[in-house]
Amino acid sequence: MATAEHKATLAKSELGDVLREMLLIRRFEEKVEERFRAGELPGFLHVAIGQEASAVGVCRALEDGDVIASTHRAHGHTLAKGTHPNELMAELYGKQEGCSHGYGGSMHLYDVERGNMGANAVIGGGLPHVTGAALAFQMRGEPRVALAFFGDGATNIGTFHEALNLAQLWQVPAVFVLEDNKWAESTPESQHSPIRDLSDRAKAFGMKTLKADGQDVEAVYKTARQALDHARSGKGPVFVHLDCVRFHGHYIGDPQVYRDKDEARKLAETRDPIKLLREKLKLSISDEEFEELDTEVTEMVEASVEFAKSGTDPAPEDALKNVYA
Ligand SMILES: Cc1ncc(C[n+]2csc(CCOP(=O)(O)OP(=O)(O)O)c2C)c(N)n1
Ligand SMILES: [Mg+2]
Image 1 (cartoon, rainbow, N blue to C red):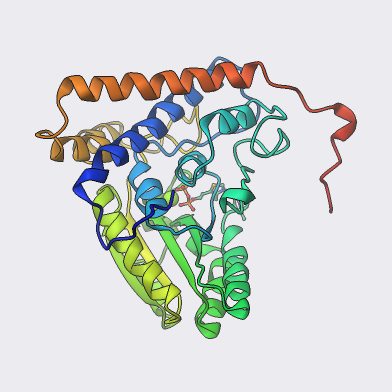
Image 2: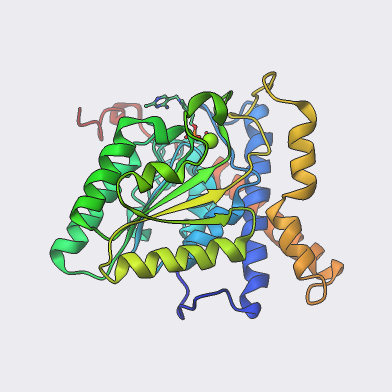
């Protein structure tokens, strides 16, 4: 969520909160995997375990009134933008108490009141929404920014190019955040993109680009702040390229036969954003304090499952209520 005071970098005093937020997302998604495998969650689910620094670092840099559009890998973005774990878990259980009232599920998480224009099962689907929202902010003279999260695979989709082209042409206050985890389902980046540096795709439209280590939450925040300040001040859109790591499969249950078994394990050892921040905070957060933090967020996640399970099923006669096309 947006913080009251906006600084160029995260304050040392904020880092404990940042660690807690990333840990909450991690424990939430681990629980989602567990409950999905137990057969309790309908649909098709994707976790972003390993990519928590992107969600938390970017969303912390937003200001009140800014909006985001997310992807099919949306749990972390949704929690970081302020949706309560209860409302998110209830949505995954298909309950009316969920943030999309049980009609959406994992790939259609909405929370408009909190500035979340939604997850999207259509790859690249959120980018035109963001250009449109940013155009609205520009026309109304509002100091707001619209921000899209998307993956490397999405940069091959027509909507990506259309959205960036118009955003740059109209100089709207938009930020495009590429979570570059080097995989599109089972296809490695080397086999889905003819160019090695995906920032070149934004440069082709003349757009300002910034890069950061997506596993380093402080670097993500700092870069997102820079991008948001630029866009908010009327200087045009910015493309933020985050170097990220997907620790788990594309979807829950993905056997990952296409991936070197040791790769994810090695990356989890060296590039885990939670471990990296914890290491930095070794002197200020003791092992006991970390355990307490972990217990606190784990209990919150457990409570969200209880909340969700006791929720209300949507009425079958309402199945087409929100269907417009
Ligand atoms: C328009 C469209 N084409 C194809 C798909 C099938 N699909 C689902 S996820 C995915 C890969 C997305 O890769 P990326 O954008 O890198 O996101 P990541 O899964 O790595 O987070 C594809 C091709 C889809 N959902 N929508
Ligand atoms: Mg990807």
